[in-house]
Length: 393
Ligand SMILES: C[S@@+](CC[C@H](N)C(=O)[O-])C[C@H]1O[C@@H](n2cnc3c(N)ncnc32)[C@H](O)[C@@H]1O
Image (cartoon, rainbow, N blue to C red; front, side, top):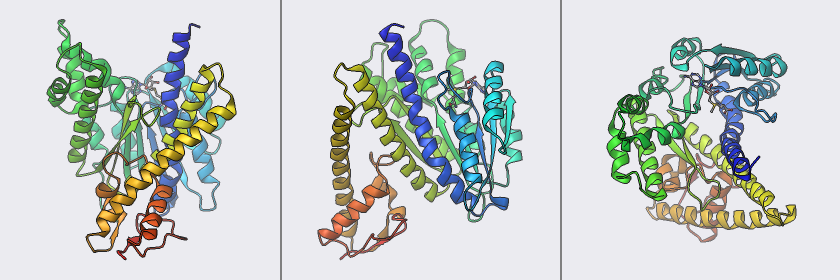
């Protein structure tokens, strides 16, 4: 294998690592929380572009991971009954997934459907209509139309109703299709496919504003991509009755450009912060994984060396995040009223820290603000810092 091909496979796998790290961190808290009040402790996951379950090298894809999670959740002291619904439209992939499920899914309630997720979704939504639901949409091309994604939220909302959450990866399709905006050939049908995925042709002007010509720089392309993803999240939120959305920038290193974006949507504020914590853990695992991969590529990549370097870089990042959080907390405290972070998510976590920082960073920041004499609030023995009233000194 040439080193280019090798790198391509490595980075492809590395990019998938992050999605899986986030799922790995989030599935358990989601099922534990939402299943604590659901009928029969039932919780459903729909994996709409399921893939083969495991990759050729045996590593976990979303299928094997969800099956493992379902077993772990069933074995907990307060068990959750997880129901998994997998859909994939490739016969061979479905067969591979079915083998993984038959080998690893003992005792788990699951369905595997060979078909198009757009066609299957209404039936699946009906089957899970009374229970908490997490939908994972991870296509290799374009996802189902925005209207259909938003339609997942056409379930009862408000206190006492089951949770509804969606995680979607729309970057792969976006990149491939947006390039056609500059093509001289007639590609209107392809562009229309992206119009449908984005819920209208608004994205064309947004893209061209940031990236007016085919020869635009990498920077411009990244800006165009982010602007379209932001527009998408905004429209999804509106169409889904005001669901909160978060965009996770998937960066191999804190200082590098994102390789793709994940859009998360939920109607629950707690869902937003819990997902943010899981994304933060996933991103940290991913940075570690990338540092290890980079070390493997260098001649002198001794284990101890890369780990020490990574630890130092993480410590630097943590200090920087805690400083920013402390400043933001102090700004809120200066208003003279007690507040909870859950009610000030934009002010405290907005602008770059959502999905990046988590409870440990907030704890350090509150403690730092207390040490500076700005608050009287203690964090000791408090698990949920988002709900904690932070009081000016
Ligand atoms: C990126 S892979 C999925 C990876 C997997 N979710 C994971 O995290 O390990 C995308 C999968 O979607 C399937 N697919 C593509 N179009 C589809 C459609 N319209 N409906 C259902 N599956 C589709 C492909 O066969 C492919 O296996």
